[in-house]
Length: 209
Image 1 (cartoon, rainbow, N blue to C red):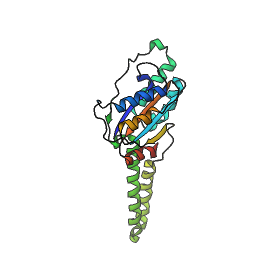
Image 2: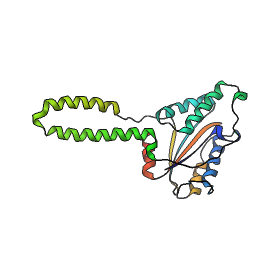
Image 3: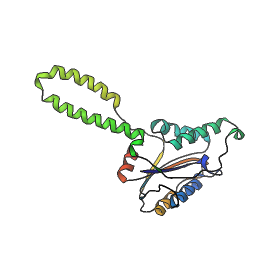
Image 4: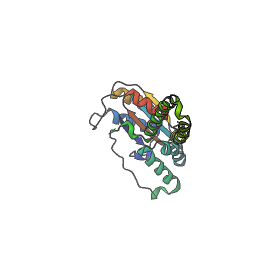
């Protein structure tokens, strides 16, 4: 799985989300970039706001729930921008956009869900075994209580991350870039993160967001 991201504070000059989407699209189409993907089905995560404080607030949930490095940096910048004079902020001169290679397990949220699913499977298997051991009902009940307490601590429940999530089906970099370029609005504070990979991987991310 690959991902590429761009946030408002990384642009060489202030621009709208629509213009940011076009910058991201240009990076997707650039064949000279290293580690570019071989397929282009994607999941686009996007957030935008009218002011930096609102931007930081919108990102707070996903940054706690499913941390993404670019979103964390964007929220920190937005929070600083909302409380400090512009002259006190570091000035970004633009940053190179590059693809990154990620394993699906690197997303903490999916890792937690996988652990919860595995524990649930163990729970189901344990119930079947306990049902066949008539001479150990009392001991099994004690073990089941202790086990349920552990399982309750590992239960996973998806919640809203307050981020727009959209699956994009594309066969080429150009098709994906054209789709991304059409996204956005006129908000000046925004963040875009694109995951590219197998459809099954993308569905897993969409399911928990």
